[in-house]
Length: 423
Image 1 (spheres, rainbow, N blue to C red):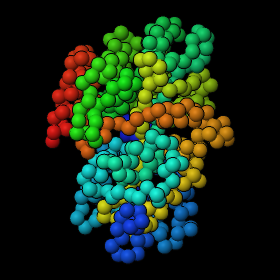
Image 2 (image 1 turned 90 degrees about the horizontal axis):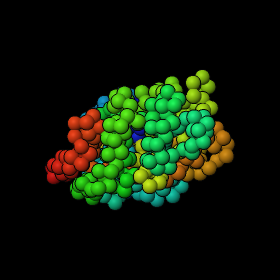
Image 3 (image 1 turned 180 degrees about the vertical axis):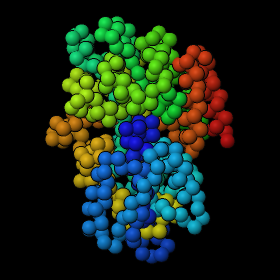
């Protein structure tokens, strides 16, 4: 998966998989009594090329625990399929530790494909608080957060400054500027990722969360979406298309298409991940020096983003569990997490890095991203999240294209998600 598309799939750019092992201290029994040895690390595409340097550092100091890198496809769906196929192998397959999208943790844990980990082996208290929840299932830690992310509202600072309009904190303020300010400058009002794929599930879930609603409870066993808050959230998106301040073209946008529309100077507001701010601000961009970023708005104030990112998990077939746990601790150390940001251009999980003056000067969106992550929530947890996502995508897209009302969409969501929960 491409890190620039990771919004919908949670930055699975590094889809790491290590053949390693964790000791009984990590909550995993070591059957051969050794627990340490060579590792195979599978990645879903290190497009920035930083990972090799990180692993070189490990290999120099761990000659008996050498890591071999295996790259999986860039497509999140293909990577998921290959991981699942490997994990189902009775003979143990190739992979020992996996860097999985945050939405896969519940699925893999419920299926028994990954093993619970001992919290004390990892510096979880040094992480941004909400990210740890993405790595848990049924009250147990099944992975360790590696990369995080949260949605931001990008806006044309030059345009709002000229109009004397502050960046929006509420949906009403966003709508007002999208309707009145954007047309004066030949701009469309607002866009997110509204093609029916994971990105739309993310945008819809954020709208529901921001309105104070939820989608699922009890690890996916209970459907909670049939509420006035959920209807309000879905109607924010439906109303935008109906009234025109969300352009119809946005119904075909994924991360990159929406970023490009904003970068080309066609949008006043854009919901996207931090990478879009970095790319749109780079030298040569038509809007470089003209943009800002704030937290997502909601009905009455600050909204709620979903968490993106990826988690490191140990396969149930791990041959060297202790080495796997040690490598995960290394990859989530502050020194390596700094490289995740500076070399990989990915949001780290270590809280201290978001307050480092040198890093903030280099990546000025860090304080806003930190605030967004701290107020973020995981996507609906379910062992069948892939099915949940497909339902949300289809239903919300039907509503945004005018095929059903917001109220009917929420009732349909409740029915179809209920059918999934009962399986």
